[in-house]
Image (cartoon, rainbow, N blue to C red; front, side):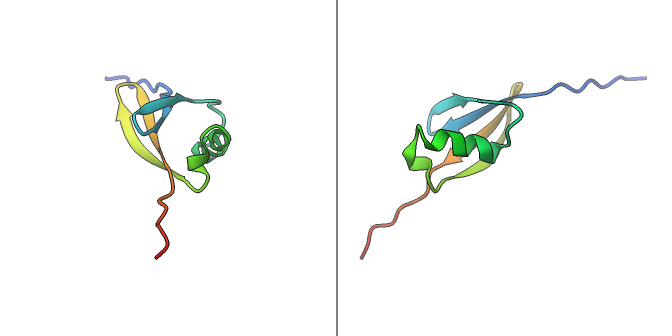
Length: 71
């Protein structure tokens, strides 16, 4: 009989080409986004998207809001 083992994946938060560390595994991805807004103002109206698993890391994409010029 095969035995399955569950491991908790490390999370990373990707902003462009930069991977930002998980500030607290107990926080939701949305709470992490809120925490990073102070350091990265372009995330003020941003959102979080789950990208997937890369190796043993669960990757979330932090997506800045798109600003449209007037006119």
